[in-house]
Length: 220
Image (cartoon, helix red, strand yellow):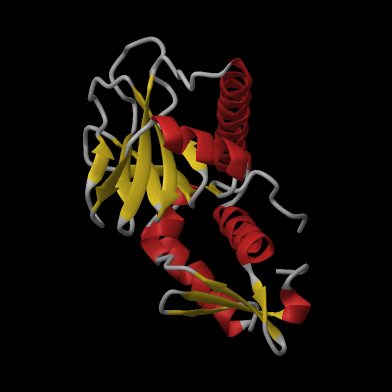
């Protein structure tokens, strides 16, 4: 199976120079694990830059079903869709303690050069996330549950895996329910597929870790 380029788990989407300039102009705020930075249906005029921690972007249906659109690691923007002044379509919840900078909609950095960089970074961020979400929708329409789950796992392995002696380790908290919410599958389906992959020794899932035998990285 080929690498999933459009992984809905993102990090490092802008450079350190721009981050430094943003921090010269805008204040940072601390959030606790489980706290919402913003909620679905809320009116807001702020764009956020994640500096530390991990953020989940999700939507909950009227009957309580949750879909995760993306999970962000540091140096990513989130909450960009504010320009039409409509209510938020999604919520941003902290999966860990979080530090984030809140930018107002003027995006004023006091420098034409840095403002141009900021607009370019936001355009890139929004464009990439749109492609990720189109890919997610496409996968849910055209691919079987097993293929969707395997694609997500392989993407995590290739993007976040650390080589160890004889295996690849992804050291991050990812639960059966998170995989279900990211892939549009039910939790029982995810559990059955992971059990089968484990039985075939394609993957070992431990608390806060995914472990892949090296020889399986390109054949999961």
